[in-house]
Image (cartoon, rainbow, N blue to C red; front, side, top):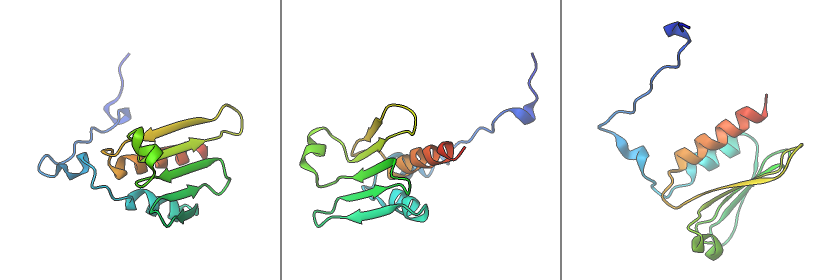
Length: 115
């Protein structure tokens, strides 16, 4: 079977001289900006944690830089999903996961849910 080159995905390679995206700067802005733009309810606490809920209430995202229980598990991002049909599931990301990677995960999740 032969596949046309136009049907194959493009190979994307980041610029080698600019690998800043490979490590976390401990900034939640890429995720929080995305969720705010999508109309999610975003609430910050006096402790500097942030909680966000999707408009349909099925997805929760927590940025937990000051949550002692999360830190014990080396978690700073907590995502909880309750599908309309199916079991709930959780994805967590550690302190060194770049916020851009978490935002990419959430963007893919939201894009998939709108199909």
